[in-house]
Image 1 (spheres, chains in turn orange, red):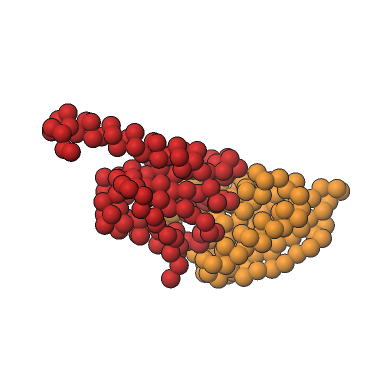
Image 2 (cartoon, helix red, strand yellow):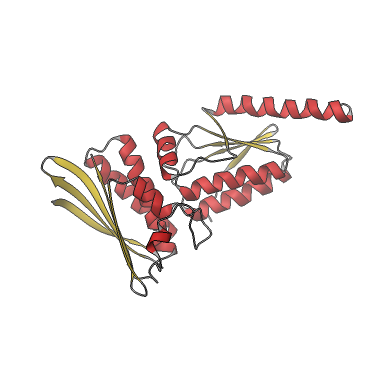
Length: 133
Length: 132
């Protein structure tokens, strides 16, 4: 299913920019339209910032997908930070613990075709998003 | 430290964002602009984001902050050149940029600023006599 993959560190706000660039390159390679490229790099920016700011840094796995003639990009953001106490609350528009706008998780979900989140207190958080062509 | 250049054009300041902005760069711009509005006695700020391939919640918040802060400092802000795909994505993300005025390009933005400022000047002279 994954025809190519790469893992990148997210340890600084400069890394967030690098990750955005790499995701854009992969989205173009996979033939995503401009609007879909824009959506996935915007979601990337939100999630990578979360990994860095709330998760204390982590990694992202980029996977170029091919499934029955469908092409897409899947991203898995992972950190070993404090985890999210209340996922339902964290997914709500406008809820924030970090002084931001509280649109990161909910917005990233709206910008993706598939969205999965797994978080354990004291262990970390993993968010996976997919955007298809 | 990285800085985005701010150009003075008469009464206005022009910022052309040409790089992929990381968060600290966006924070620096916010600070630099407010300083410059005061030191240059600017009446308007134009922020050209036509080179940006995305605006996320952080950059969106920065644009809103700049607009609010400049208003308090008696300057108007207009954001120009947003790409269509960026606008669509921004709305889907959940941001509608309340309080941020926008125009299609620098020229239109400039007209908008001039019109706003001349309305203010006319209102002022109506109540207090011609300030100029």
